Length: 381
Image 1 (spheres, rainbow, N blue to C red):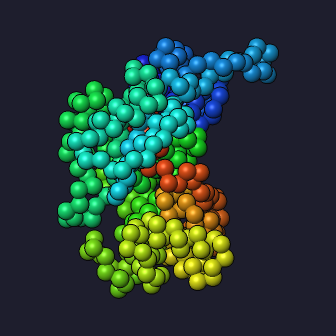
Image 2 (tube, rainbow, N blue to C red):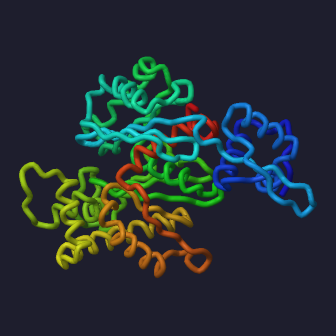
Image 3 (cartoon, rainbow, N blue to C red):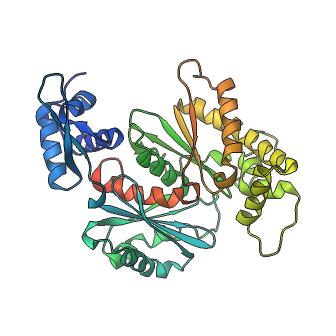
């Protein structure tokens, strides 16, 4: 690997070094140079800056083939924190994470008005007793509305500057599926060399992609609309204007609609879906068949996504994967093993999120962390 000279080491090099340390958990300076292609002087300078900033620290030594032990460095978790808010239809999920993406606080409250978000931020962080000087900012995530929709789910974007002024910290806005992808990438210590994707199963269906350590957002920050990939050109009409969108067959809302069941008037889409999922995993044949059919539809779209982007790893997350994730994952694995274009060259791992209901809020907080410690990946960071 050609070495990059020290003067070329800038924000992008810092992000590269942080990514390698994050994914390795613990690593020596010599190994950093080997893995990044940066010169030893560049590595020494960047590591010194990161230690001074409190982002990494030395944690011990490892034996060396040359006899002299090598000092190991790692991310210093509790030095900085990111806060993530996930605006759901009726609730607000608040999460705080440390520099490794580990959750240090969580709260779910009734969804407040936009004018109350600053107050909720203050209440949440005060309750965790986090040092104010170590909180890097707030990210708010919401579902992406349909084109032309009058949905107000993106109202935080319009008030971003005002909210930043009120809390005195940077504020970012992202869609839930993209945020979830970054959160899974960060907390799982996925290598930046791996083409990584995440499928977010909720009332709709979204996807997020991380390439080279950074979220892929597209021309208008709208990449990842997997739910609007058509799997039947003459299929069910979709509010987006297309027909046969996989969201109309495989989302939580589609499963509830296809069940033909009537629920209590107080039931939400989420609670009705959870009832079906609970029945399916407890042995109800009809409920299982309903979800298995939905999973089969999603597998078709997921295979097209994997083939198009040559992904090596996919995580299934979101509230729809909380109870029935194993049904979807089984279908996706089987379909990819038979049909993924690159299956003879590399496996495509399909994994389930450890915290599917909180994935979007964790990812939002991770977005803040990444912007703070690895500038260059995040627009506006």
